[in-house]
Amino acid sequence: MTQEKFTEEVADMLGVTKDKITMNIELESFERWDSLSMLSMLDLYDEMELDIEVDDVESCKTIGDLTALASFS
Image (cartoon, rainbow, N blue to C red; front, side, top):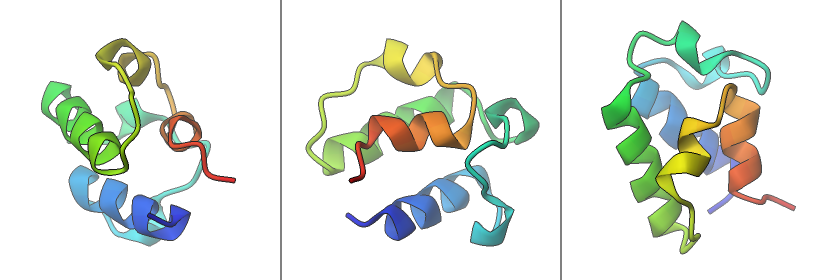
């Protein structure tokens, strides 16, 4: 998965358009960021064949933190 596709997936999960996503925006600023969104993120990481734990996602504060877990090079 490309970083662009990842960003699209995250935007969709949060119920916003991709242009509303920036790396430094706080996850708490999104109304739809909740425990179900965290589980959706875990599913997305699983689809990417990444071994990410719940604690890893819970510790994320920004979109950039979520993106860093995906290890895009």
